[in-house]
Every structure is written in structure tokens, then in C-alpha cells.
Length: 94
Image 1 (cartoon, rainbow, N blue to C red):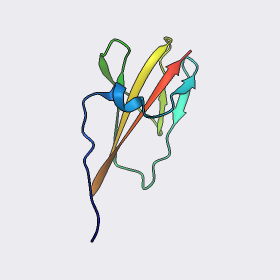
Image 2: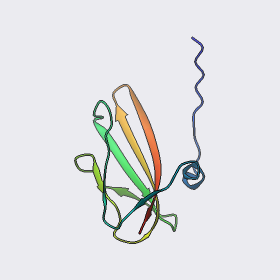
Image 3: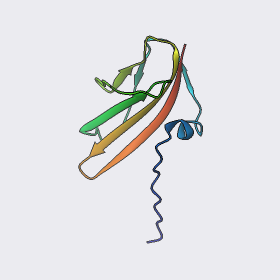
Image 4: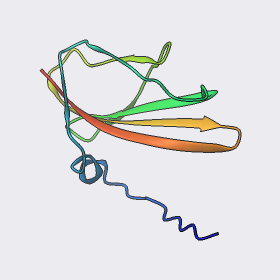
């Protein structure tokens, strides 16, 4: 009854990523995600240092980090029949 919802919409992923701790990882590391209630649809997008964006393949709730050193921002979008959620995180790959 007293719920207030504010949509978080900003095209600037870098600004959003600044609000969180950056993960440190090695080239080619694997990240595994645990998402409750197994969403039937998960999309992962990676933003490179030069601002280009590309889709990342996710298999068995895992993604493989780039083999090139650099700073990357990831956006993971999970969708269920009755809702969706977006996760954002950044990684320094060494």
C-alpha cells in the first residue's frame, strides 16, 4: 500500500558502474551466476572500453571473460513470465 517505485533508466552504464566495487579477474576467467527461479530468458551485454557493445554467450549460467586486458561493463537481463531484472557490474581484466 505504501510502496514507491522509481525506475532506474540511464544510458550511461559507466556512471552506474561507478557506484559499485569493480571486480578484478584474469583473462579468460569464467564467471558463474546464480539467479533464483531459473529465468527462461537471460541476455548478457558487454560494453568495451571504446564504448562498443556486444552480446556475450551464456552457457550453464556461465560467461567467459575476454582474453584481452581491459575494463569492461556487463549488463545481465533476466526475464520471467511475470517480471524482469537487470544486473550491472564492471570488471578489470588483467
